[in-house]
Amino acid sequence: MKHMTPGEDSEINIQNEFIFWKTGFVGISLILTGLFFLLINFSIIPVSGELHNRVLGILFFIMGIIFAFFQGGGGGLFWFIIPGGVSFTIGIITVIVGLDRLFTLFAFSIFCLGLAVTFLLVFLLRKREWWALLPAGALLGVSAWIWLAQAQPIIGYHPVALLFCTGNAFFAVYFFSVQRVKMRFALFTGMLVVAVSVFYYVILLFNEMTLLWPILLVIAGGLFPVAVGLIEKRIKKNDGY
Image (cartoon, rainbow, N blue to C red):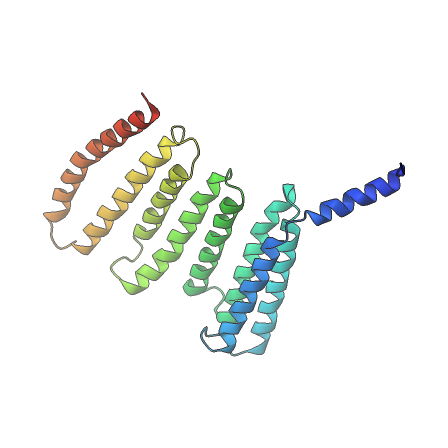
């Protein structure tokens, strides 16, 4: 039987570590980057007309792919997914909007959406990092807030979309949790925040009907404890209490 020297043993360990290097995210990044630029070439996605914006955007995409490769190392290297997501997002903004409109509301909405997708990927790749759903929901809410305010000027500075998306993020924390009993606070918080956002939106839509929103508040105050009681009863029944 052949005995290996310490140098040969360490070389084999390094090779084995490289074999198990997770490169799937790199492949997904390359596919999505290629599809993005194909859509640009077919004029499906509008882009900035200046050449330097495209060149700078491509450089950000290359940075994102490099970060995606390091992310595959696992352990502490996993968190390279966040700067990778930021790089891809800035690259998209630079290509579509251009440097001269980098600090507009439209660019900020895309930036928030890109970060939301990044934190969602953190959760999908590591299910125990349930906290990532909360910034994902909040950032998605900020992006939706900007778009909704442009579609419906009555929304203005009222954070209806932010509250709604954040509440649904708490719902996601509860429903994707393995130990739902310990995460019951997320269910109740999500119910409260979503209910507030819905009634907030209804009040804004019918702000001229002065009697409507007090009536809705009374109804909500009566139904919310009933709903919580029914949910608790069902949870206890499922847990065998």
